[in-house]
Image (cartoon, rainbow, N blue to C red; front, side, top):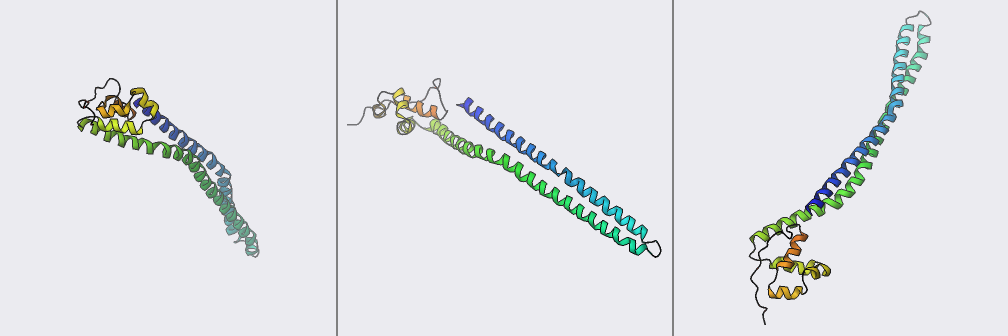
Length: 202
């Protein structure tokens, strides 16, 4: 059981790592689409700067300077529009990359974690409590009773021909070992304490 649980833990960690890597890669690939947006923003910035400089220079020309400055001002506005469009495209692609990468990673990770972790924590809690009871109890009656109530009939039949008779006679060893083994607390090499055999009440 220990080896199986370690294997499942490692597989769960590998699954989480795999989908985290996939989500990161998808984010990076989608974010790379923002390259044209950066180019448009840079071109708009350069166009606006050049038009402003040209407009400022030509405004000093006598008589026609003010008239010629207008078209350069309009051209500067076009550059500003291109700059804003490029920045908006980058923001949209960055948001898409974030949500797409996160969703692609989070859904499979959450599916496995929510299915595996609660059961794992429940087993830890049950096995820890059973371990302390096994050490502190005077006999194994509780574990034998639980095995008789919770274990499938084919498992009970494998360890005892008459589970009810063994309980009545105080023969708890086989049934208790079955329950403890199911919790990963003992195997055939462990010697468990057993209450003295007592005759069934009449």
